[in-house]
Length: 368
Picture 1 (tube, rainbow, N blue to C red):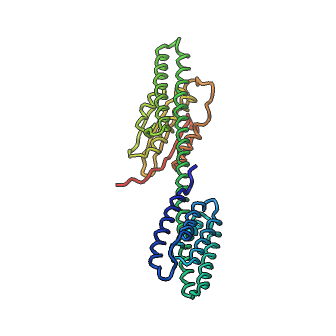
Picture 2 (cartoon, helix red, strand yellow):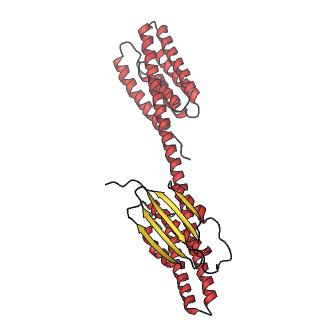
Picture 3 (cartoon, rainbow, N blue to C red):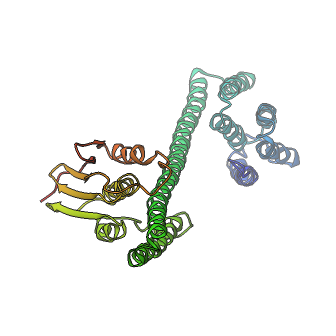
């Protein structure tokens, strides 16, 4: 697993270089009243960068050593300025890495040590103390703000990842429902037509031949639709819609039923509404073929201002059902789930002569 913050060695090198360069410049500028740099001074300046390298594993000890080295640098009479960088960086890291209590404690120790040094050399004053306190507080406030910004960014990234996972899960559920509808319709149609062909092959071979042709078409269709649905699951595959109302005529032709299609009005629809309406008609025709063979089916699509009404009505069975089983029982609940997912409704129930399914799918207002 990648480390969350992997810049400690580079940061230590930057701080070391900055301290050395600033130390040489400050020493030259303060040569009249501060001690010149020597190996001991450079050794003290290296403690801070080394503490930064070890800070992740030893946050408190590394900060303490850096502060002690800073104080020793000042007590040694070396130039003001360069030794302050490492303690400041370490206090900043403590805050941004969530060690806030330790950070504020060490900030208080830093202020106390600098004020004590001023008293030790006889240069302490109220202004000196206020300046030290102000600088350290400003550093801590900036660090707290950086921590808040980083926490918010991480929350946003986490939320985005969770949303991506949720959308992926919803897509998988949609694909599962698509596969269920494709298989349920076409396999049921194949079963019905195969049973019809077996029943009529001796007495009416012409009708049996028609049923076998329907089986061939349905099997080809189910393979094509399954390939289209499964392609969506492949990385980089085009996300083309697997079903739409423009394919209703083909669906009706393959159903093996006498179907009358009527459209009232017309308007563009979203892909989600198109797919839901198509699947509702498909499932309704599947149920009619399974439970009411030989019936006449009326399919009505009414495009309103605010909703699309899908109505599928059959006249009841006119010949015995050829399926021995009643089906999975997921047809009507599945249709209702599709309608509900779009904010619509679906009502299904018997009529005087047969069975009717009516779905109302909300549509956005048309813009002129």
